[in-house]
Length: 267
Image (cartoon, rainbow, N blue to C red; front, side, top):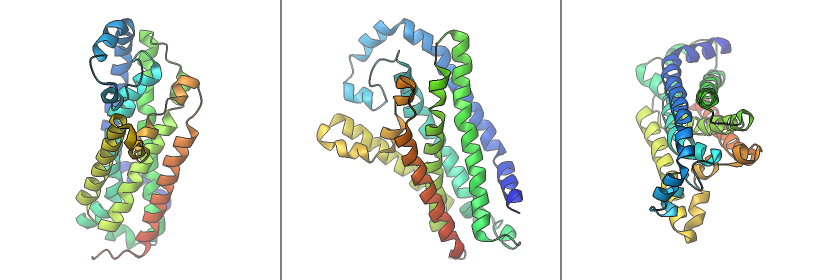
């Protein structure tokens, strides 16, 4: 029964996985192809960037030279693409099994079978994990494949160390959407809260960059931990950041399953 639910979730996620996977793959390929242009014209780019305040640049992950692989990755992926992809995937995957299916009247069908609520939602979460893992890998495949062709000299081993961090960040976002969908039973409200939370965290990080006295706000932002440079710069996996996102994801998913056990679906 659990395998059937996982298969069902994966089938229902095909369109999302294919289109978002295509987006991240092509985006990764594009920025990798563009990297040699940046590297070869870094003097001009640095002169241009010097016009802007450093705190402003830092809010986009530009804390150093774009010719640095880690800064390049954080600017175009950690600060721009991946948070948006995680929000989109999380908003769809995390709210579908409970809130969206309840609204469509579909949820009653699987719950009328022998599978209980705990196993049903847990199996759906496994489907979420598979899709997020595929998306996390797809973006890196695009970067490394095209980077090798254009002579970007990306270290494949170090770049691949970033995959678990991207994956676990996506898991944390999706887990938040999942628990919110159980609490609110509303897809729109759950996705809206997730988007608002990410926006607030982005603003916290931006304010902390501009005002040193408010650095504590940056500590509350997930973006500070997503932009780790240890993997690409030093070849050291960002285990602390990965553990943080992993703990958040497991805790929120666990809470969602626990609440779903006795959630009144008529309310």
